[in-house]
Every structure is written in structure tokens, then in C-alpha cells.
Image (cartoon, rainbow, N blue to C red; front, side, top):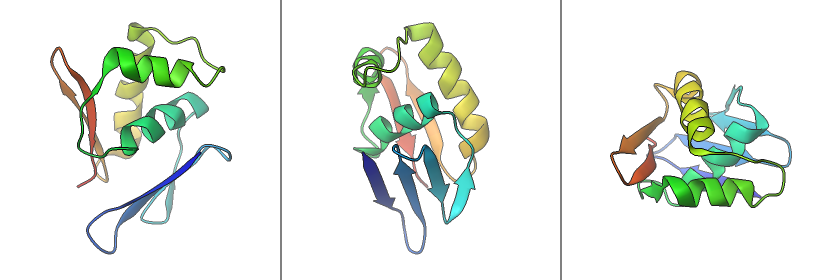
Amino acid sequence: MNAVVKLPAPSFIRVDIDRNQVTINNIEIGLTAQQTDILAVLCEKPGAVIHEERLIARVNGSGYWDMDLGCLRSQISRMRRHLEPHAKIEHVRARGYWVDLA
């Protein structure tokens, strides 16, 4: 699964799950395979809140991971350090996460 999300010109984020590669504005961002899977799900609908349980189910559905809520939160915390300031993963209490590609 590959996703390209166009940001306000000329910015964009590309998530290539097959190659485990994330680029923002043509700069490669070093994420783990699990983090890449999480970001791909969040980027399917930029700005939309994805419930934590649904995000876990989608990532676990790939057959490679056995993630729980604690693992998800830990991975997102690590991802934030790599993605900012190009993109931010925001948390909405009791709802889930969304990616801000500003």
C-alpha cells in the first residue's frame, strides 16, 4: 500500500509501505516498519480522527504486528520526534489520533 498526500504546494508526504519509506518534501524520514504502517492509516484521511482501537485493528490486520494500546501510544510518541515540524500527530482525548500535515 502506498499513499501520497498532497499538502499546500509544493509540500507532500509519501508513505511507501512496501519499501518501508516515508518522505516529506522529498526528505526521507526514518521510521520503523510498524510506525510506517501507523502513519499510512492516519494519512488515508488527513485531518480525520481515527479511534485508537480502530487504528490498532488496522495495523494488526496486516498480519505482521500484535499491537496493544500501550504500544500504539509509545510508537506515536517516537514518531512525533521524527515527523515534526513537517507533520504532527495529534491526540483527541477519548477519541483517537489524527495527522496534521501543516
